[in-house]
Image (cartoon, rainbow, N blue to C red):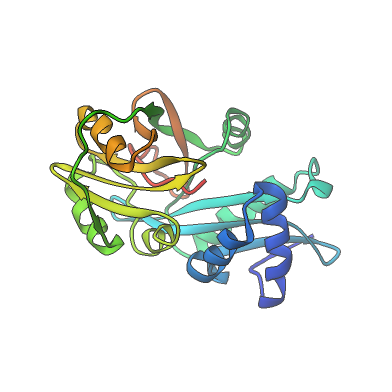
Length: 250
């Protein structure tokens, strides 16, 4: 078993693993590997020269600390049940410490993964609930903006103790999502299977039917409250947790 950062010759196998684990399209993977991927923000695990597991991360910060948002953690089906995910995560934690990161965060895709990462020492935070909103009679006036403008405009909306995601994260998000501002509201999202999925929304919940009407379809939107949606692992001695992670990439 070898854990290392990938080289260009590993990209094909990384794409195959990603498609097996997450069933994303080649179009999406083209966007990720052109706009979101960095070999310096990826760790792979090989067994006898064959790619068995991989993970990626985006840089973010929390109260001045450098934090890694782990993303697309996957083990090839043929190698599952051998403790390779734990080995990769543990090695990545040590690697991140050496690089000066103070913590790692991730967003489990299901309840079972919350239990798994809990065994690795992760603690849950950021209660969020997904709602489906039907279009109202009136349409909100929304203007499309760049991800750079969204980055600047969202800062006053962010709650205290936010795990801040900017730069590369938003640049990658812009390859498949769009950013909008309206009267006293801000959001980003993308069209998916005949509806509009809102990645992040700031503003009054009463405005959501108008926003759905502006897109001409039902929208799904994550709002504060409910069950914890993210997990955090401290790489330093801190016992505190962030309060908010808004932009999930799974």
